[in-house]
Amino acid sequence: MSDIREKYVADGFLHLREVFSEAELEFARQAVSHLPEWIRQHSGNANVQRLQPLQRCPAVADPAWIKAFYGNARLSRVVDEIFEDVIVPTPNMSRDFQVTGLLIGPREHWWSTGLHRDYRDLMENIDVETWLSHTDDLRMFNQINIPLHPDPSLWVIPGSHDRADTKDEATVVRARDRYRECQDRSMDARKTRAYRSELIDAMQACGGVNVQAVPGDLILYRSNILHCGIYEPAAVRMTLHDGIYSRQWHDYVLETLGHGTAQPG
Ligand SMILES: O=C(O)CCC(=O)C(=O)O
Ligand SMILES: [Fe+2]
Image 1: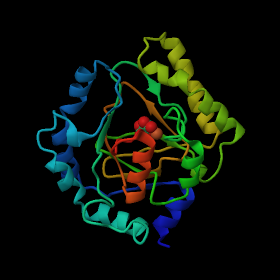
Image 2 (image 1 turned 90 degrees about the vertical axis):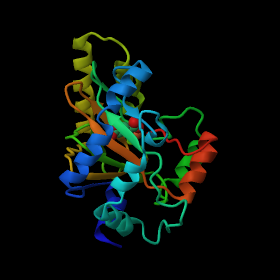
Image 3 (image 1 turned 60 degrees about the horizontal axis):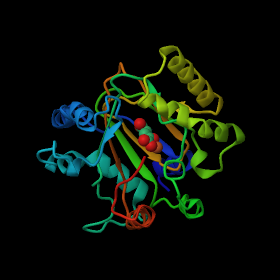
Image 4 (image 1 turned 120 degrees about the vertical axis):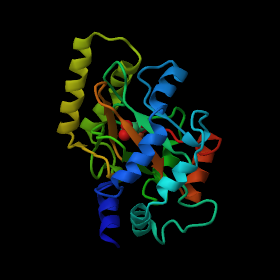
């Protein structure tokens, strides 16, 4: 097994440096710089977290830039090294990037997704047994973040993709609504600050790691790992977000959502 695959399988996430050059990042920044304001206006939510998929967004005039951006040879080498012989490329399905999102920062309020595993905690009526039966399949639950500006939003609990929640983690997961609600409620600033410290203390107590990402980095993470986005209004956040797709993943999404490839988380 390659070193990076071994680390990815063991930790459930990878933080790689110097995958994208400044020229490549500037090209992407130019293409997306108008989108944060567009989605805030369009959604009527000043604290909206994402725009996804860019491929079907009317404010993206020509999504061809996305393919050009992903043509990066270092990105392909990383993906090959981890997924070779796991997700075998086919012309129109495997490994394609096609549900590209842009993660952005809030305008007004601090808020957080709270600690969660995607699908299990984000969707109502999910069949948790089926989800669980797929969780160690490397063809599924692979997400990437590519920061175009410094981005310290993501926290992960290394190794948690491979095991059940501990008692303390389960307590933090159960409390996540109070942090999410900060997104659209005008809350007393003192209360918001208290929630923020409470969550950060809890993440640290559970062995959480804050991924301090900077432009050039590539973050890969298993979306079934315990993770959390913590968002500060002062920061400029523009982070491309996507998945490493496979036939098995598309099939699971279709079965779970009943349609297409839109993915929560
Ligand atoms: O903001 C991030 O990087 C993570 C977001 C996330 O985990 C989610 O929306 O499910
Ligand atoms: Fe998530």
